[in-house]
Length: 504
Image (cartoon, rainbow, N blue to C red; front, side, top):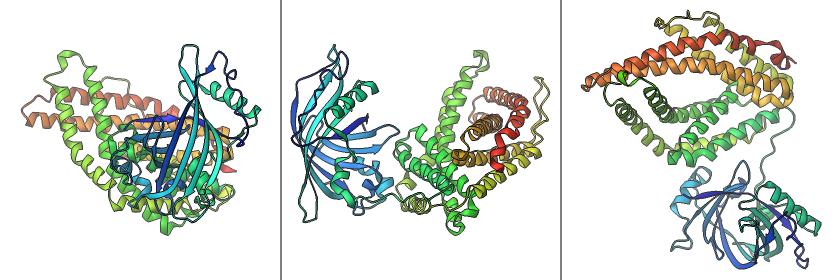
């Protein structure tokens, strides 16, 4: 579905106040001729206003230049707007938008909740060459909550939306509006203003250091929900981002288990693992396809026997197909929605713990990772030779487990970073560097094993497995080579100056 990033600022302006002079606000720009529109919008939500509670709006609007159904979701900057045509039915939300919002509505019916009528006078802010830098909309608004016997609300507001301009344009226009008597709107959404006190309040994160854990957990919940539409549409980045958010959420629940309700968090971790296992094969297929295609492309032509690229793509796609279908099926099912409800319940419960207790739990997670790495003999590196190293399954498993434990410790440091930002950031960077070494080694191990299986598969299919074998050898050598950086990375991550803040 087409979408765009909406970056705008909203201002309140008295009903009888003249619109401030904006023509000279932006250097070298001018105001174009105004256009007037009558916009009629009906907003939709669940009965318990689940969309509004998450700053998401869904409306059907007629009039103006962009009549249609619009869904707006918070973005890192501004809001991401998705639009679909009006269609013939006036009261049935299009299936595409229902799917887009499914991770929020979770099977609950969407119904009309408010009606907003806007008399708009819109002025384009034009660059010398005619490029539209921004749009200034002078709106006189009338709104009502449906199903309630209340008088309608009326107000006037001015919206400034960037088109091709930059932040300097937005700042300049905002300054001119405020100089002329406008004030930044306390509520930036017409729907939020219409709902007023009916708008569900976001539960407070609590007080003290525990609020940091609550905020971190909520950020991961929000990332899971935000990436669900992309996962469903097959976006590899969304699959990756959701998987990372799940890992952060599970790890944080595990590390800080002593200060959480373990009766609730333990089954939640199990369900999050179920979701992660659904995403894993899909993500792994995406990564391996890219990784192996690039590896084949770097080989000399004489080492490529047969259509290896096509074979690889076919094998990996065939393996990923059932996993993709299962993921799609589960994302539309009740178990996924129940999981999201359980996550909401967990993250909406404030964590009550002091800074000292939380630091100790993070330090304990780091100690566990250190012990596991020590069992993997990190100071022993392969000799600098092209001889193929002998596989060491037990050591490889230790190093892989150490990597996972360091991730858990890093996430704990991320969550507590506001307690002591400078050393915390350094620790996070050094743990990331250590994980990169361990991760590159593990990737080589996994990729090499996969290539050997694919070589045997190609031979069974009557093709040559030679090129797969060459690639497997390269992976084995690369995995051994990267371990030369492990001792230094481990020492840097163990330095007292980046860890002492956890001992306070």
